[in-house]
Length: 424
Image 1 (cartoon, rainbow, N blue to C red):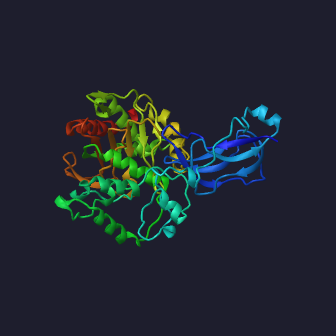
Image 2 (cartoon, rainbow, N blue to C red):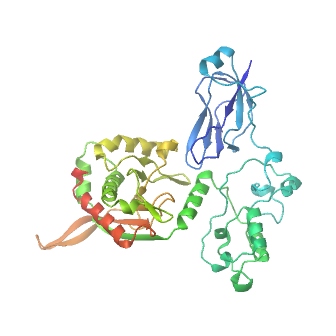
């Protein structure tokens, strides 16, 4: 019988590879069309890879933990001619031979990958390239493209690197921020090759764990976001009207949804605060789509609500609940996690009263919501202190586009809107 390949699909515009989490079928199993065969993790979400047609799973070319590039053949299905014709699948043939996942011989020397800690030869710490892999017999496969050990940046020494030092960093798949706490012994505080090798030897026996694809994606996004000058400002907001409205609502919408709706209306009135600086132009967004930060294991997912300024809370509620549930299961579709112009993050859920969140690289502003606390406030009306529910809200923006006054106007408008939640 002819064989039909199961290829790694393109799971998003910026997705080049995915890591296999689970094999949901084994060679010899009978499978149906559109059945999930693999569960894979990209740098954005966990998704399933399905079959195009039914048949017998005959060949398996990957295993759990492998990172597979888009378009690579993961498995083969033996299918009848009738099933192939019915499903429209394309069988593998002499003129249509799919590529298998990368082998050691096919990995280019310019794409270093880090071997497991127990397989590393002495003196090699964060990855080697080319012949070094062949010499030590490391198990090569396509690795996640985001690399580097996230450590705090700060000391000037890491910014002084010779061409030889940069070449060594490239060979190891490291970034300047990965060695920012090294005090350079070279002229002007420059970090030398000897400093780097001494550092690598120093940390070679430290406990370590492999960072997940999501953790590496978060690290990469925050590095790119931090290349911009960012500014934060905050203020308190009275929460009693919102809490009362939520208690009397039959659907009890999440507090974060109130803030997303208020932020969208505030940005619609001040669109320059959500603009993008491109060259000498500031581009205004075509729609007010707001992301909602959701904490998941080892990272954050940000589902995006569409046209939040144009839809009421009731109209948004179904999409909001669906997207939050999918994000918590790490099952967001690519179209549900891209295109936001701003994000709301409720760090108050962790008991934090203040934080300075960072916007995504593709966004100019993020709004953080702190924990609700009771505060005594003097009332001239009753001539006594009365308890008031308050929360701190903090906005961080791209300082190239927004100034403190801009952030202040947005926060002021958000606070005003939340005093009359029935109109949201």
